[in-house]
Length: 166
Length: 73
Image 1 (cartoon, rainbow over the protein chains, first blue to last red):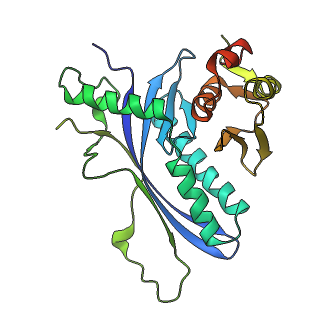
Image 2 (image 1 turned 90 degrees about the horizontal axis):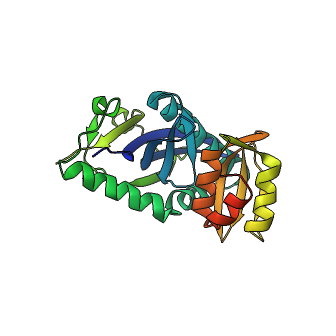
């Protein structure tokens, strides 16, 4: 049995400038990757759901997806002058679901965990993460506040990973 | 099935299959609203890859058969 829907876990961190504020946005997201009839890999957002991108390799697809995600944050910052409004809109972007892709993501995870299916190349080389210890969520934090302390431990590398089989 | 569709055809599909939908140009993307949901990432190109349209149709709950009839997915 082949796995055609590949469940992906995303970690993305951005600093977004708005009109009069600076926001730190950290995403622990979910996406589905599959090869479509056009011969390209497509990454379809699950959390957030309202986004998709394509590429000739899965690395290229991730980089294009990552860039489009950042552009959505830029657009939301441009459309919302107050930090609170920016935060509300980014949370809406993250929380509005695509039930079909969410179901496919969960089914693909079950398939991996049933041990019947090993991820094919190039997915076999991706890092593994636990969806249970890294649940999907987004945090939006105002950074330009007096007394804010910054720590190097807050930094997060851009990662796309497969859920582990355990 | 072509791998992309002219934006004009996507607009026509939205008019027929998603009555009441709105399209707004943001700085980087087109923002489509329908069914009280917002799709903020449709590319601003003249030709849109079908994967983007397919995702938008699914996310916004647009009738897939109607969208197919308009040849955009």
